[in-house]
Image 1 (cartoon, rainbow, N blue to C red):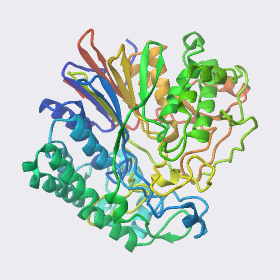
Image 2: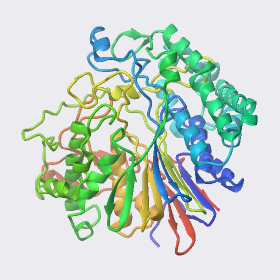
Image 3: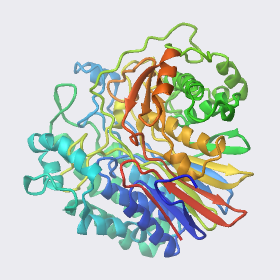
Image 4: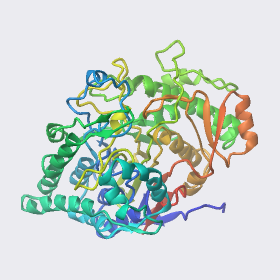
Length: 577
């Protein structure tokens, strides 16, 4: 058997794969306790909010896909927060701000993650909040060892913590010192915040499970947690990338009026599989558009990661992401023509635009006949990372979630609560003609994009990765490795990857790198030279540096659940029993 970097984990009761091995173990504990995949996923997700504060905290957001075995139906949970009701293009322009900054308080949206987890637990889970949150409290209260990835982020941000954000330094630089790798990191205020939520649940257990969960949710959005957040961001000014010091604009009504939505996902068929994604409030449909375009090519015959294969996949990505730039946004505010964008007929039209021998340097969305200007990128991009989790249980329930935001390096920790607010509002544009134009109470279209697959209308696979705009490129390659090149899950994850940065970034300041293709250095030099001859600009990235794909699949015929996780960054792992 070909070498793989992680064991191919197999079980019969359930498998969990997540961005940190301790979160995966916590999910497994929940399965062993009798919880289903959704209970395990929520527990893992809340643990990740402690374990990966540079990638995600409960000040962030979490889109979720769920397959209910009882209903044999797929659901999407819209875990993206909304802009403040006071937020408007005029508000920013009147203050001399032409691009929403990528840090500080101004890009904060209502933190949606906790409501998304509560919604998933209440509707699809079986356990209490105490059951799924207690392990995260233990991690926060007793601490966990600092690992290399977290240490490197703390090191790069330490000067700002000391100079500007004392509440962050207090937690993540105890005694004013950068914690060493292996040092135990304790987050006492975060543990207290979580305990407040459990107290609210406990006081209302006599009203029933769902009422108790609602009480915990209200403690966050209508109680003292919301009050502390609003008091902190409206009482403090922080320097952000606009070059000015600004206070936050979210208020208590923004929190109290926020609601998570359960939606129908979008889907497309490929090689006998049905792939589900969240709607155009994420970049998820991009994955489906790429598949539809690529379906017309015999990819297997091109050879895995051959110059021609990489060229075709990259050119398909350019076309799909051009449509994302032109059309995607909060469907409550803008019309997104998904029926057309995801149709096989439209994919055939787009496929004809791909020159098999020449890289396009244009941005070609569906309704533009002329070249759209691409603004060159700058290096000042606030593109922090994300995490991910996947679970399948022995009953066939599946969950795929991509928690992100509330990054400690992008906004200061809220005093007394132990977590910062997210900065997802940087995805908005201050151009009123853009589908991502800022508007009060609008959701920014996030890059976060979990994936779920059924086969013959039965549960089959869940997967995803961190990586901003690259998520639906790296996971696409994983999926094609599995479907087209017959790799097992771990082989498909381990294979070297590539991505294009041709289109405008979702993150501040929304620049692009026309024609650029980034490849892991494991892709051979002769392949890179062949791509250059087609007109691509090549950037060579470190080996094993692109994303952290995790995946779980079920083989119902054999009665086995299989999980895998990327070795990249060294902390993702799959576990099962």
